[in-house]
Length: 358
Image 1: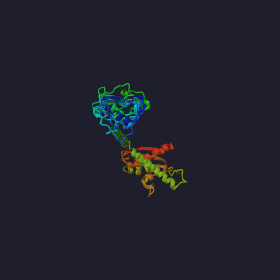
Image 2: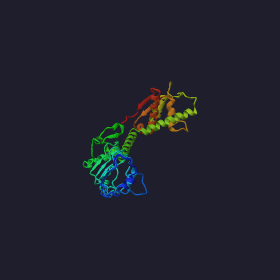
Image 3: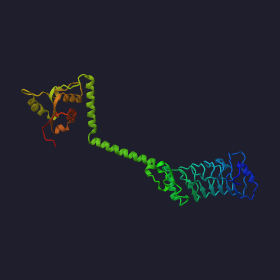
Image 4: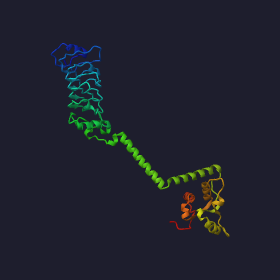
């Protein structure tokens, strides 16, 4: 009865209900459709092979099928899915769903005897990897010529093929990537992604570990190179300059008041006070020194006083000794003096080696 103008699948089923010897029926290339009805379809119980290809049947067709059907051809229709629980065809062995609108492989909850399934030329992007678990009796699956999307989701299906023992008909030529554009034309057997790229948890753990390692390395380098100290000193320098600007905006140029600022450790103060300062400040053409004990301004922070003294002095004298190396305040003074040296491009440092430094 192929190539006619039959329209109602329900009426066709009633037409065959009294044909007790009917085993095969070809209704292909008609105008058949079935939208679901309150009246149940009634097919001949003897019917085991039915060809409904090239009609206008949708998902509801599975409500109207012969109970004892073994071979069913639904090729070239408008089926987008096989509804679960709608069909209970325990005798069905061969099912052809090629050239429909399927987005995934159907399960076999209602087709417990299914051995052959054809889902070629549908809209399947990433076939379910658990298909063979759902359909343990399937011996041959034809699902090539679909627009496969080669991504992480497809990796499990590709691995499934290797474990299926040749159940995928047409492999590998009929199984080709359609998406993304860069992989179009690549056979699925040649498509590979690393476990790291597809495992989100592993990727996050790896990224977290790398971040922790990087943070640890940066922290170690900062401590080893004393970066926090330099940052703190730069911040102090900036804050002091900012306060000076706000307090005296018109006095932008620094006025030199001293010939030299003298920096030394408290443990070397006896030599500085008894030997160095008297010899520099006595006689004609004496040197005017800035010493923290007598020239620091009360009320200002030590760091701010150091910066002011260095900026108001033409030179900075540093009395070097093991005690100087151990003094944190001496480090501050040396750092700010270096800062002035580089910022003004001047040779303003004088170093006196009082004792050998190990």
